[in-house]
Image (cartoon, rainbow, N blue to C red; front, side, top):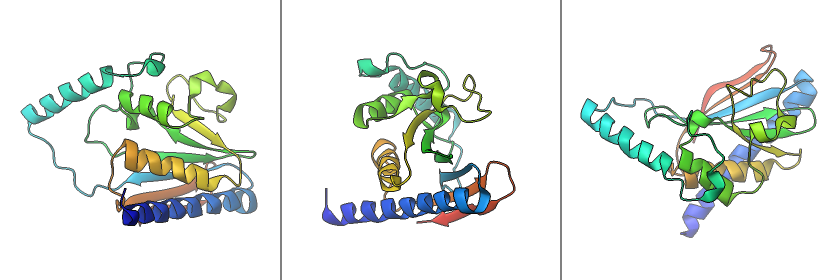
Length: 198
């Protein structure tokens, strides 16, 4: 891996960690309650593929989703994964009282990507398997993300995990632009609202 690429990745990870540390302060000093932050892939204009190309892409993605290649993902559901390449991807964090967590909703992942995440990084789990980390009011049956829980002070580790998903699993360029949205769950506090970072 070229050293300048590693330098660029490290810079992005530091940027992500900066936002996560800021959210910790906001949750405890400004809101005194839970908050969330979302990092969304920025694609200003996604052209619609011709019907025949979209059909071929869908078939290829279905084959890829069904080809897990790893026995460890056998327990994952077959439905509810990323439907196509047209939707933006995002990573979100919930900032709770005693911990914070990285969430990857199923609609942002292909089935085989979930397997790679479980294989590459310890600590990720399918929420249904660890219901003790369900957020207040969260509907586990309909909203069933991959989650990883962190303690405060571990923001750089969380940013590294997010960087791995963005740049290794999803293959996004390291200089990709992301839109950052941060709010309190009670809706009273709005900080970043689609702030573009690069």
